[in-house]
Amino acid sequence: MIGQEFVQLSLTPMLVGILASLACALPGNFLLLRRQTLIGDAISHVVLPGIVVAFLISGSIAAWPMMLGASGAALVAVLMIEAVKRFGRIESGAAMGVIFTSMFAGGVLLLEQSDTSSVHLDVQHALYGNLESLIWLSAEGWGSLFDLAALSEMPPQVGRLFVVLALVVAFIAVFWSSLKIATFDESFALSIGIPARLLGFALVALTAIAAVAAFDAVGSIIVIAMFICPAATARLMTDDLVVQVLWSAVFAVVSAVLGYMLAGYLPGLLGYDYAVSAAGMMATVSGLILGVACLFGPKRKRIAPTA
Image (tube, rainbow, N blue to C red; front, side, top):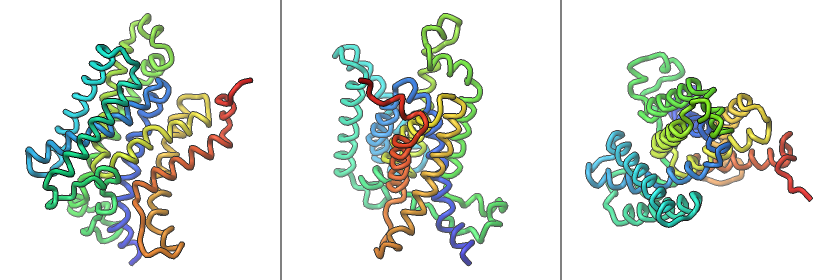
């Protein structure tokens, strides 16, 4: 039965891709407007050594050790970036570039020297995630979505990312007015009593939570793409922040769904016997959508060079 096969093999990977894309794309709008998109890139890289260290200490890839290790690595990275900025007297972008590339390279070396043969943890997993393995074999069709027993056996990444997405949406909704003012004019926000710097720190913390939650399932490539591409594409569509956020959500969902479908079916249509990385294809589709928006988006002229 096609419906049962889809629910068992494709529904949960697609859901995880959608949830991860949304959880990254929504805060990505504010990172973009604050010119801080490199933070998402940095965090998605620096979690790798934390995850590897957590595995070496705990001996498992359970959710909590991985989350704690990744969070600890993100905290260390933030402190190191601030130290490099303060004592090295270089601008923040260069400091982030130095730290996240160094920590990611260290994580790769540590991973290659570790015995991870008994678990699904390797360099490819860190880059591309494990979307294709998130199948729901206990499902017996669409009715399983309303069966508590079947839902309890759904891959845990779905529930984890759903909670993170709910946290992201709640943060943006509750602090919308203050976040909007602080994003566009921090000095004015401070003058009227808005804790702009605290909001900025909370946004970075939320970015770290989203990146850590998504990293295990989709890897670093799609995390980087979804922090930047949907928000940048939406920025080329409108000057209204509310509309921009909604557009970014649409582009994130389209990239996840279309990317997953193309990864599974396009190689077969072209005569190949194997599929390609779903996470990699999702990131590719998000980049292609951004490219189209750069050419045809209604607000593209504002970034054109002036004479």
